[in-house]
Length: 252
Image 1: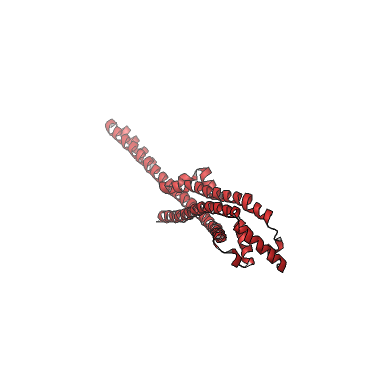
Image 2: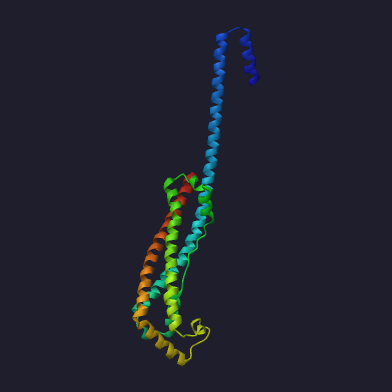
């Protein structure tokens, strides 16, 4: 093709047709420009395809990580809900009419602490490398960027409750309870004498205004944690659904 155009150009020059040569030269230039534009368009199209593929890959990896984190969160959060019920039970039941083994379980549940530690490898890599900019849906991008702050808010409430429990409840029980660890861990049964002593300790403890005040304060903190947890669980669920919808959109 190039040889054809070269020969054509030489033929026009030999014939001395200057005006025709100028027109021909301009035509060649136009053809070259058109060729360049077409090549650029194809290059941009290929680049766009690659960007979309990278976006889908990023969205899939993030969705998988968040699904795993949601499963872990549900386990931790459900344990917090159980603990909250246990704390409420102490304030509203008649201790004297409960089996001592049940009271043991309440004490154990009341001081149990839980920590949510999600996997953040994919999320952090995406943020730190700037791959979050691959997400073409601006609203989705904002939600993804905001997720880390919402997780931290929940974790701060967890840390506050853990610290309060350690400083107040655990300290109180250590100082006022003499229940053998082997009994609480169910490694051995109580003697009759131990049962009478421990029951009297439970009744005295849960009748005191000091322990009731601790429980009321802790329940208030738990209330805020549960509210944060419900919001975080909803955000996880909604965000995962939004990611899956975006992935499906790019597949079509």
